[in-house]
Image 1 (cartoon, rainbow, N blue to C red):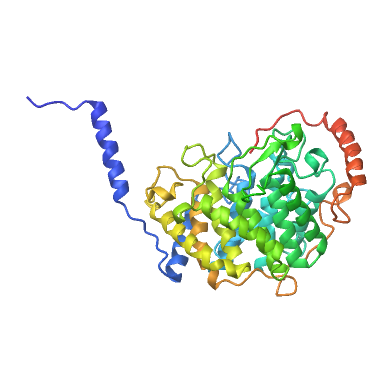
Image 2 (cartoon, rainbow, N blue to C red):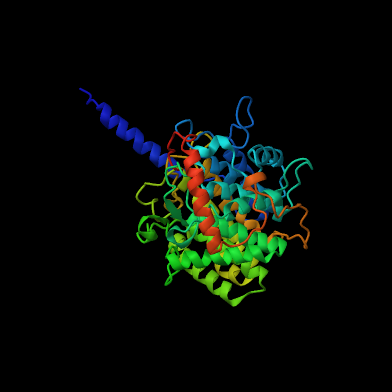
Length: 463
């Protein structure tokens, strides 16, 4: 009599077979030479955009499906994706997706042309706005084709984001300064000041200074760095950058979680300032500290790992993108601070090789997961995973790429130093806050809170 196999045993055997087959698969991607890198990046860009539905009839241009529960993605990730594709165009020369970039970046500018559209107010953070602003800044620095003359221009949009964030009402006196995470006071997270919000602002200020030569941007960048250092969000001993703190107790109870994009957004901004100040020793010291800690912490054994969540399996959808920013922004660091290239570029190449090795999954048999260090597709893909792997691959083209331009070295984008929404929202003169500014902002905030209580009847779920 034949023995019977239980359904449970059969299922287990099937699972083991599937895992074995997955492990046996080889990635179709190669980074062996420039042509292979470009071909791999082209395929990966196409795969990433399969998650984008904004170019379909009845869908909203510029955003990935969401926010939750309508889909996995918050508004900011669309801006991050277009920023990635602007660099993709610049580094590969492939203009396939330029129309989608143009349509999306213009569609989402918002009513005041400062990347604060009203329909995302319920989850709008300074970091969210910052990612769209940094994408616009990349378009200006990369010489991306200009929008029609009746539309807001790339440099103007970056300045608008910066100016709204430099406004006194964003930098209140709690914790001695700094940006809060969320913009509307009714949002969950408004009581939290964090490194990524301030990092995006710092990054934009550094890049606007290099592009325009306006020292007001440098003053703001320096003010932001000094605040981060003083409050302890940047560790004064090892340059670790911690996530943030609630404003109660003067931001002293710091959440010490570390994420790769916090390190990278500051490192890239510092590299822009190092470059713009002809190798200033202070900015070099800061860059060296960030790179040493960043490579040791987030690129152990030469492969990118999101240490605060990856091994524990607790990474959110947002966090699945962070390693891509680490690769893109570190590659730019190696370009703007050439002395760092000898250290950074080999590590990024090793990490990119690990990233593509595990791109063997899902329906296409080449989609990418998140756990690069394992060497095996982890069973789940998405826009963030694809964006991160694409960024790792295309960043290898940086040695052949031109450095970001300025308005005196080939920049074609027109700016507006007073951009920022118009009317009462315009910041006519961008400058660091003074004590009278803070006092005035406090009075204004009380008035705004009193009037807005009748407008906002909800609490958002933080992104």
